Length: 164
Image (cartoon, rainbow, N blue to C red; front, side):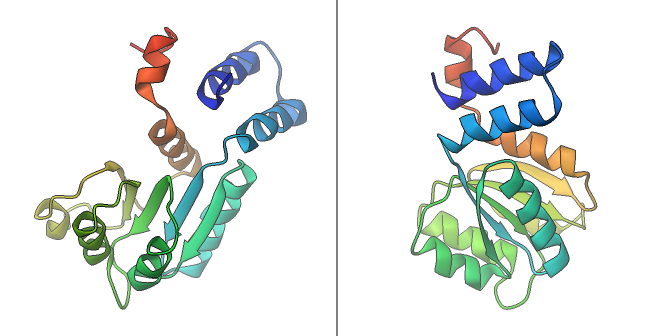
């Protein structure tokens, strides 16, 4: 049984009163079998560390970069399932990093975090694999929902009759 089916089963189990520590332990146990790698690119240390802690506690393998240049260095040596990135950063900003990812044909899914919903740079660049844009400040539960949704293979859920 793969992670996504287990996730749905655990979600349903929670609806039947299985919760608290036993639910969290089941979640961690099953998720660790299919550990997903996430790169967080954020120049604000407090946000970067908070996101890392939250996602690590949910069983994700988290790597951190404080700007686009650091992320490019890491992406050159390792593949990830998901990149969560800010846009406004020193050295190499998020737009330039995303252009590099497109140019080098990276396949990672992307979640963009921005404090400026009217940022014209985001409208004027074709960025593949963008799952969602989150407007800062956002609730951590919203981030977790987006992260989980981006990891779900919808075709697999459709075949199992769990997604229409």
